[in-house]
Image (cartoon, rainbow over all chains, first blue to last red; front, side, top):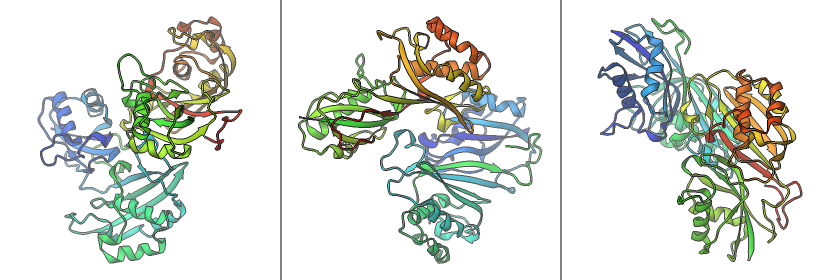
Length: 257
Length: 257
């Protein structure tokens, strides 16, 4: 039995999210389970590093599974891409240590939230950004973002249905940049709460359009109340960009993902 | 009766192209006709500046129509966007002179062809670029592109089914640039033949991967034979970016589109 790790990218538009939920088989997880069955004949379940919500996209989510197949670790990407639908691609595959678990080790992940800031929506961007037509000042947004960097209790930035035992998380970096009409918020941290990045995006948008001051953000954190922060920005603007493993990936031949 | 001009952007993914063809109503043109009927009650047909192929996208195609409606020219965009599907947006609308015709005046249009040059396809880019996995040298591509600038007989770069009387066209500029993994070919000219930009893209890709030399491109033009050029690159990489009217738009209050 060998453990295989996958770096998975997907267009979340057509899916009910990563994880099997309620009675819908229309999840990224289920598509991977089926592709692995088609390739190896084994009925098994992948373990995802991040259970992204419906409509959220990924450039580099991570999953692991255990197999008795003789397919070499680095060849699984080709075999799986052959049977997966075109909106899911395995960017990389590798054999890892049998006790490696992407949720139980030191990781840093980076999300990007994309806001199309034009008067009129651009149809070819509509599935991969949040269209916001009022002017946004990205410098104000960066100032507000700076207040969120570091270790904080992020209760105000967490969906009230969260079942996490602690709401303390550490954000390593938030960068707000503009490339023409697209405003991108990049957030790196070691762990994120339910809807946390989308609530951060919704709050920074309030600041960017002048409805909240950057100087108010520490008080929003302080209140530990979801109602104090801005709205949850819609899912199609969110991309899980990458996972990094600062301590390395045990058992992996290829240390770079 | 007033003539209204629209600047139209669309995601061509779900359509059979701009123009009504065979028996499919699934065209951009038909969606605009229906939206105008819903807004004004008039059964009429828009005249498009460029009849883009199935799957090709537009940021700024142009259309005109004549109406007895009292809706101000600049308000048509709002009214039409209210009833159009989300994959078609009117970016701008304006009243123009009653004899203005976007195909019978001096125009310059710019196309962009986007090539995603990564080992593995990125699902969120798959509908809006051509995935090409072998390395491309964009400097070689630019050298080849330079040979196409100016007035030439572009028979070698034209679909054999073209019914154009002359295949002589003038390309004002071709710029090949790379932004990370995306290679973009931007082509500006006063007129284009059937599939011309997609055949230019397919030929520059041959040069970029080292299967043809830039120095061979003048001979390809010289042959006036479609078989001498590269393949027709697929439609989803092509964007009609903008129309420009160097002599202005007769009757328009707003000269900028």
